[in-house]
Length: 400
Ligand SMILES: [Zn+2]
Image (tube, rainbow, N blue to C red; front, side):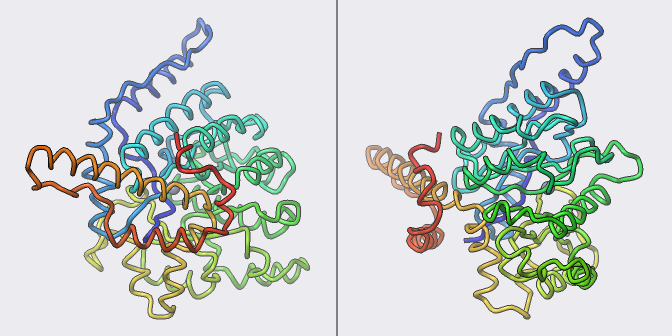
């Protein structure tokens, strides 16, 4: 099984943006009355249409199985409005992800956007995190280290300011992807500078503090290949040594992971050479930051599976860690989700089969069945993980 740990709903139906536009327009209303949450009217068919020719088509074309899926990151825009603005927006975005996961349970597993707001304690995001994990079946969250959108007004991620949220993450056994949103600082292009700056900044914060002594099981994914970190691995090793910190491999071992959203082969070669393979998760961020085709290769820049497949420097067992095992380790709740999804698909296939049998027509029998190879892979993984942490998590029947 190939798990893509980094995908956003960048193709959501237009009604979502229309809601956001109206929400932002209401912020400018001088009467300033109480703001209602409102509704977002989107039909299931619109959701299907938004995915079939985008993420689902690319999953099939590129040979990946399931995407850990979250709301569009650049649209989180925590700097806009206030805590209530962010809460209503996050709840609608998260509800939409839950609907995607319900429609395509074998293709998507949810990760939530948090209702952060500049100056508001992260503890205030706990109820939405808890709702998403315990009620919607999500397996993690995206945590914005800079809700101010490029002005960095929050304390570092290692500050106790963030600790109540971390306590809840540990209790729920869910990781966070460190993910900023749009930039309102003209110095920083969002995807070209702000994102990569934040990845690099978060790593250096983790390097200099004892956060993981306080939270030994807290886990973060630093996306976009870790920003500048792999390229400057020697500098960080040297800094860790000068600062009397543990060696980098030891420091990040159980707590900090990088994805493979690096859109060229030399970048992936470097990432897998310097960062321990146990700390790398396959990710593509498709459909996302860079959408075009690389004229040098003729392939999409964000077809990152191709780069992992091409690696000759790692053993197949390590490739499997990057594609699947590490994601199951970092997002332990995914095991129960996939097991539940396989059951849903099996029962849908049986219903189809019974219906076709009643009609005496077997032309579409089994068309929606979970692929046999993937199912057996999942069953094997489930057996392997029977004693693993997700045994502590909710059962598939609790999914929603
Ligand atoms: Zn992203």
